Length: 293
Length: 293
Image (tube, rainbow over all chains, first blue to last red; front, side, top):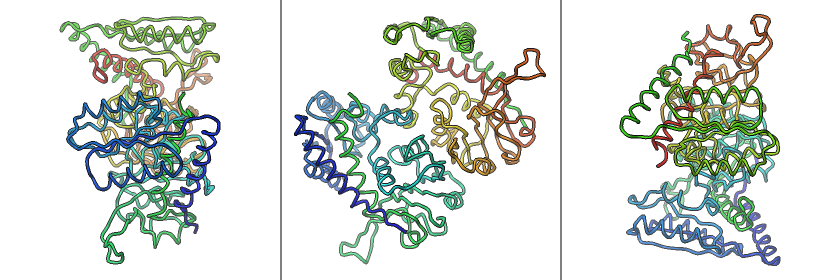
């Protein structure tokens, strides 16, 4: 069994990006610049956004953090997005979700110009993903494909089971793993709340990507000997074994599943750090006009 | 075994559309108007386009057919598309594929305004399909969902196997059958040229949608008793049993598979006519501004 080390790969990617930024600048290029909008004071959102800002500093990007009280109107927020769309210095824009209920997330996502949509949530980027055209791929799926690549995990012709069909993980992973490319060319089955025989389907999988947000759902009896298991779940649960009284837990019962696997990601330290690295890669590609001119 | 009669359903849909057009006009609405561009003199393309024009007449739509020699430049074609995009009277625009090699099909597809993209091939429409937002759904998948609905075929929690992963059939069907809706909520597996155990996967399917373009690929031993089989394949093969010396054949070996099925579509007369009806429905929705304002 080989542990997939998301922290290590993420650190490698950050070093590569930092180097590319230096070369960019040495050749007279601009400094990549990410803008993030945070509305309200949700604790988790604050942490996510401040991590993203830190990541930018670490690799030599500029970052702009725009903060609003949760009393901001939808129109004010949309106006700000349009202003950033038109700001020639800013390459990528993310709006931290969730948003207060009086603001339409879908309207926000569609207002961000698709060329600056480094979260990859805009319909144009999703549609280009369907069509196998270059696009910004949502950070978590993008991060997972990087892990698969860097551990040289074979995917062609293998049965891949995806647990969950969310817009930001399950569905893009479905498209990525079934398309004609590497990683890809898998025979993909997507399971969800209406699936009747999940355990049996999982037992046939060469690759399981668990993204249901259901604590320790995947148990040893669901995993074939030699399977690859990617755990996207990350739930904070009470624990009497940590100082804080909390611990982060995945969708996979790691201790019993790991011995059966050829490769497995831990939680934390697997997919999580890759999501952050993938956002940086998207921002670098936006600055370098690698996806769109 | 119940035969799914695409000709009958398609005729019903056309009558419904014709009635809606009359009501539209009676209430002072405009006549739906489809424009089609045909480049070159390919026999099959000529037939397809002239059928679409006939369909329009039959339901009371206006249609405009624009024809070009295959010597037209890409720029001339794109300019014409932009002109039609800006024509307030035209609701929907299709460009018949394939196009001559010197013209980029992708550029043509992306130049059609997504609000007039009644073929549903534009990235915005594909992306909105991923996100379960209202969109123009490509005609063949849309037609298949209509057949499923009108025969009241249960889909929730059932295993659906899709053979083929094309942009115009397999991949949109994957998205439609796995999403949280009716038809949908299936556990979908997509098989393709790299899939290793297609026969075994098919034997587990409650619903098989065959869209590989591989003559009589699906045989009786691949089909579970009571399965639903939708045959999207349509290939012209030589036959000594017809006057013309040719016959249309699907991806399913109909004679031996049909007795095992709860529902099955024939070829011809199954999915084919539904594709034509679906294009009319998309055009009607475009005229009625039901998807986009």
